[in-house]
Amino acid sequence: LTDRDREAVRKEFESLTSPVKIPVFSQELGSETCRETEMLVKEVVECSDKLSMELLNLVLDREKAEACGVDRVPALVVEGAEDYGIRFYGLPGGYEFSNLIDAITVASSGQPGLSLETREALAKVTEPIHIRVFTTPT
Image (tube, rainbow, N blue to C red; front, side, top):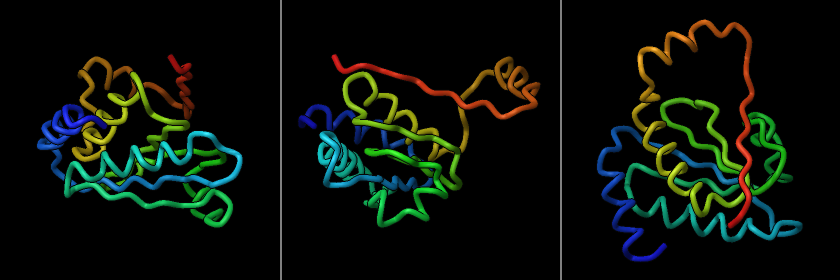
């Protein structure tokens, strides 16, 4: 992070109300972006005393990976008071970086920030939905 980015993230994190833990699943071999992802999350976590990072190995920490539903690296789990199912796969850089910051803020508050109309529509969903968002590096 640049000094300017770090300061903007610190300012954004002033609104954090509860602790957020970010388990990072990584491994040395077979991934080009694991090390970058680890470094990025470490820098983000340093921007607030309400954040913590746990570095895990996908193979060695298999039970935790399975419990989190993680099957590839790099992977980030964003946990607030509970696990809300927020996952990031790959390096959350570029436009995805702001989504990571937003996810941390949401996990801290425990409130999704959705309109009443959206919450009412979601209340009608009766089966689990698995949403994936794919991005390409720019």
